[in-house]
Image 1 (cartoon, protein in one colour):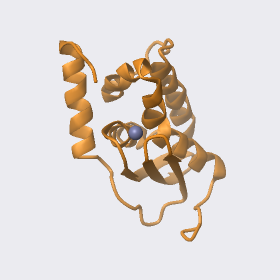
Image 2 (cartoon, protein in one colour):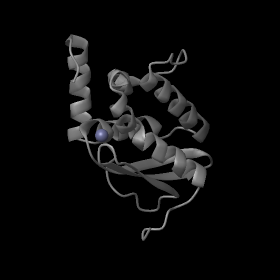
Image 3 (spheres, helix red, strand yellow):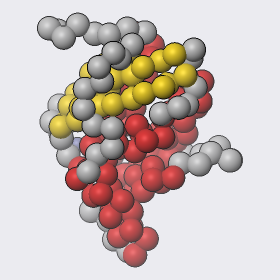
Image 4 (cartoon, helix red, strand yellow):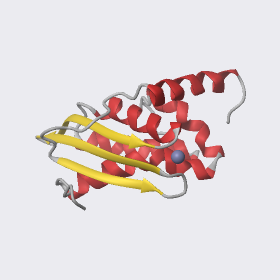
Length: 150
Ligand code: ZN
């Protein structure tokens, strides 16, 4: 889907995260959770968080779908663990800017997430890359655990 040497490197990072997702699985004792799906691509993601004193002390996810959606969830978890809720919300904004091809604020370290910047050339893939991030936002906003039966 991408061309050029730098993009090959990016593709390796994406494939690595999609094949070996970090922080994948159900989180026992989570305080917040949310689920999102992307009917365009068939991606599904659930995000589970433990928030204590306005800090994300733990985060896991269950993702099924394309490489980009799984990789993005994996990278998000890596970045968000140990962040304050305010930092998490700022990171969300910066990531959305990256994916939309807007300027990312100075001093923000996106690390592996940078590898998803090529998605902006593929509008149908934007939803794949941002799915887990919207789930995280909804989990933080709703402030609770969704019922397992819903
Ligand atoms: Zn997808």
